[in-house]
Image (tube, rainbow, N blue to C red; front, side, top):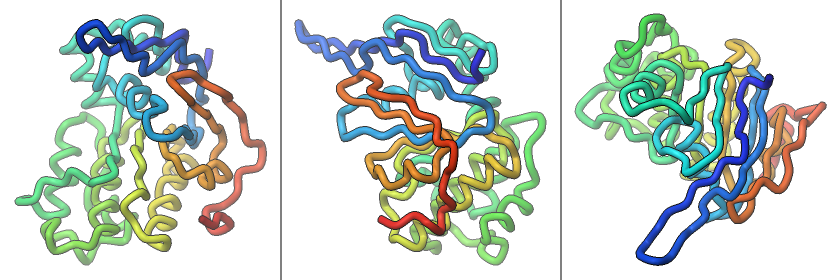
Length: 233
């Protein structure tokens, strides 16, 4: 059995008499320690897929498994525990708490779990040890995104989910963020899933999943991923 499995997953939103099939029989698998890029245009179903995998949304039918646990069968309290313990989230627009410093933002996440990583070490890893006493408003966009990654990684999660993590960043900062994410796979054997519409990022992934109109078009293993330095966009 694969580390992550989606089996005939459907998500239907109803507005009056209209049904929107955000996911329509999605099936794929991801192995532990892989960097997986999920590609699709706006409205393809990427975010719905990520939210279901992260326990932030429920499915209409089908099965989702992570490390043998059936996520799709969890109740609300169990989902909250799953989100707290097993999943790290990196959003496009950071979602840092403005009245906490960088180190306090990371410490807050580390206090949610029983085996966290050291917040000071994580901030040093992302190159922000000299900025840890700064508030988000005192940091650049790239620095805020690095704090967001540090916060997610500090939980020592099984799964790191990233929603367009470079979408609001300039080219060089975006590359440094991708380098950080790739390191979580190689150095910590973390499973990292990135959703994006930037097809160039597919070259750095171990696995590339393409989604269109709620359906999985392809799920391909990349036997020779490129380094972040080799990617241009």
